[in-house]
Each structure stands twice: as structure tokens, then as C-alpha cells.
Amino acid sequence: MVEAPEAVPEERRWKLADFDIGKPLGRGKFGNVYLAREKRSKYVVALKVLFKNQLQQSQVEHQLRREIEIQSHLRHPNILRLYGYFYDQNRVYLILEYAAKGELYKELQRCKVFSEKRAATYIASLARALMYCHEKHVIHRDIKPENLLIGMKGELKIADFGWSVHTFNRRRTMCGTLDYLPPEMVENKEHDASVDVWSLGVLCYEFLFGTPPFEAQKLSDTYRRIVRVDLKFPIKPVISTAAKDLICQLLCKDSSQRLPLKELLAHPWITANADPSGIYAGCGGASA
Ligand code: AMP
Image (cartoon, rainbow, N blue to C red; front, side, top):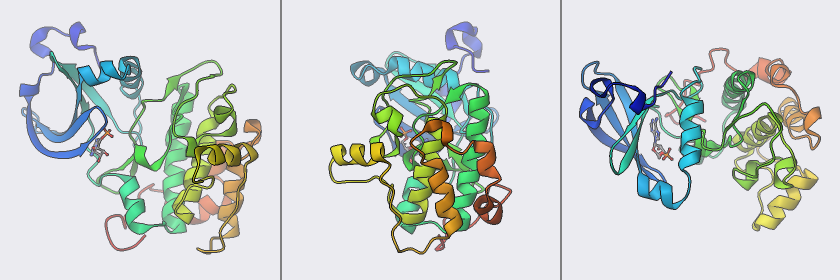
């Protein structure tokens, strides 16, 4: 468990001087992420540096607290570990697992679409990670390529818990990016863990066809397409009937009719295509 810095005696608290700082890994909305190495153990991590004034200005401190609280308690091979955090006068530092192969978003941009084997391997590993979250009463609510990183072996890591909630009730907050939101969330109705099942359907479609299914020029049109579940499969690329069947079973307007994650893992398209190791080894090469 990650202890709050103030609960730890000062000599044992993490501080910036405990780390050698390496190359920048990326830039986020509220700060930057650096490759870093803990000096004593030589353990390599990603250090996310957030500026307090920017967090305050955007009124997201509560969201960050929730993200830390939730992510630090999760232990799963497909969920990015949060090892700890500390702060100084102006900044908050998150000590994160380093995802050596970077952003899935960029991989998808580079490849345009993924093969059915790669898509199924990723969807199955995300389904396992989300089952684990849901068992712990955590719903992610913002599954999309931008929030997924790729680990050293090519395994997917859910990275951003900024919109996640710890819940025992049905929720009613609008959050996340419109393209991945289910009808009940865009219509501001109550929602539950099945929102993550819908997002897996959107993601699976995007992996195979290269764009999310309800994409439109105007937000209002995306909204309308989601609410009507205006789902169309392009003729190209040619995708198996089994993949389309799975997508249809995830993208159901009635959330109670969406395929449970356990059944997703037993779906013929997943069993025929997903690598049981959850690792897509071809990542970084020319293949998709
Ligand atoms: P974020 O502020 O979380 O959006 O992070 C900004 C960028 O830093 C991301 O888009 C990634 O390219 C990179 N990044 C963030 N966290 C990690 C990590 N744990 N391992 C590797 N790269 C990361």
C-alpha cells in the first residue's frame, strides 16, 4: 500500500534526491514524465511531475487524490503500478511503473489498424484487468488508446485512473471522452461497471477499423450516433464475422445485455485469436 508522505517519518519519505533523473518520456496536461532510477535499488521507474498551481487552477486536486488512492491499491500485470508519491512546495511527484514501449495510441497511429490476433490479445488482457478492477468495485470509465501504455514485453497497461471511481452504487457523473462513452453516460443517466464493457467494444472496433465507431465531425452528431447505437462496419479492411459478433455484443444500448467480461474471454473470436500470455510480441516492428 502507498502511504501518505505525512504518515511516514521524514527520514523514510521519498524525495527527489532519491532518484537519478533521465530523459523526458512525455509531456502531459499538468506536467512532465521522466525516466528515473531510484539510487539505492537502481530500480527504473517513470517519475511524473505535476505542478500544484496547474492542478489547483484546473480544480483537479480531488481527482488526483482519487487516482492515487485507487491506482496504488491495484496489482495486476495489465495495470500500471503506482509505487508511491511525494511532494515539495510547488510539485507533486508520482512514482510509476515504467512502460518501456510507450503509448498504444502512437502504435495505432503508426500501424493504422491492428491484426485480429493483436486486437484480440489486447482486448482479452484489458478484459482481465477490468474484471480485476470490477471485483474491487473500481470502474475505470475512461478506457481509450490514449490511456494505455505498452510494457517491456509488449503487454498492455491501463495507465490513467483520473476518471475512475470506487463505487458501491450506481453513478451519475458525466466524464471521459465522448467517442468512448456509452449511451447511458452521454445521456447523463445512472451507470455502472458495464460502461467499461462498452468502451472495450469501441476500442475493439477502433483496433480493427482504425477509427472509433461513432466518430463524426460534430460532437452533437457523435452524441446522436452513440445514443442510437448507429453501428456500421466498413467493407474494408475485411474483418471476420466473429469479431463483428463480439463488437455487437459489447455495444448494446441496454447495459444489462452487454456481454459479461468473463463471457467475453470465452468468445470464439477471443479464444481463436488472443495469445494466452497476453503479450503481443510484434510490437515496435513493421507488422500490425
Ligand atoms: P500523462 O501526463 O500521463 O499523459 O503522460 C504524458 C506522456 O508521458 C504519455 O503520453 C507517455 O508518452 C509518457 N508516459 C507517461 N507515463 C509513462 C510511463 N509510466 N512509462 C512510460 N511513458 C510514460
